[in-house]
Length: 120
Length: 331
Image 1 (cartoon, rainbow over the protein chains, first blue to last red):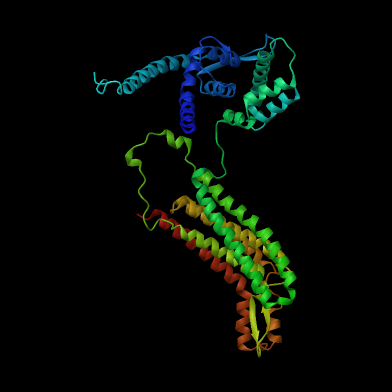
Image 2 (image 1 turned 45 degrees about the vertical axis):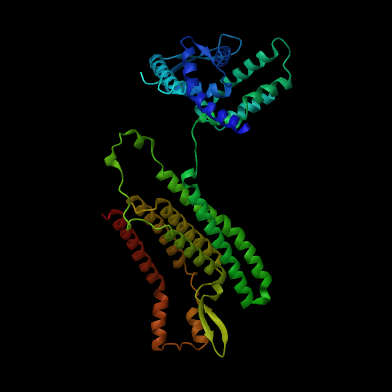
């Protein structure tokens, strides 16, 4: 059944790719640096590779959703990221969209439970 | 620690200069954080560094994630056509070089070793040449034919749909292929049988040839010729990729043609291109008598050949441009 597993891995990868952005944005109402984000997300069950997260942070910054600032006061310099004004707006709307998706998909998936369940 | 430097270098070396230092520093911080978490209070060993770098993965992949774009000379859309054309060109080149080797060896078996060396040299020179020129043609098409980001931003309406190209506008796939094969054959014919291009003298059997071209400048002529054929392959590749006549294609082909014509003219108008003793040799073997009518006609034609070639080429150039534009704008 390794074939099934392969399929699942591939599909999960695609699924995660889209959702990870929401996860990242959700954590950045307070400034965080990359690695602290990795650990804090991981602690909440969202696993993301640093090699994926760091380029993603830059991309979001480039798109204007995040602001960044180097902090050189600590033992080593760290780049802190924070939601920009646009980022906040986008995140709030994204959450609404996401909940819609969860609800809709929930309905669709539930159909198998009782044939005409989705019709209400 | 040196390994960390190497890793960071491997990731950042291909990234845009403006971001390089910033990314490098952030990456260094990340690696140090990861190391710290791994060893806690203990000493960092090389083994720990290796483990952390392994976790971060192949630096090329990471660099790719940072740059986020794919840059191709020839993208996936054109790649199949590119390979097809390349295979055809390579086989035609190979077969014709081999063929001319065989023919030369039959005509002149004593010098078979020379022919063989020529054959090897020909293969070594010609194959990379044709690959290079074909790539240039497809590369141009990729670069100019790419769907531009800003084209995609304007709103699309079904009315924008381009009409299916008219039969007459379409360039059949075999046309450029034949064009390429033809120009390659021409090149190889010239390269390997230049000595045989001339007036063949039969006097109780084949006795010799009065060549059209000047033997000693053969190698410089060859360079010009390679350039001309190269431009030709580039042009045909463009036609193959575009698949239909457009104004842009017509202009591209005209530019390439103009370059070829200029190259031909430089080549032909050098004093040393044509055999300078051509008329003399014809007289010597008794084919012409000096100052006879036939001689006068012949020498006029011979001496003006450069001019005629030039005129023909210019006419051809203009013809192809007009033809392309007409085909592109036909309703």
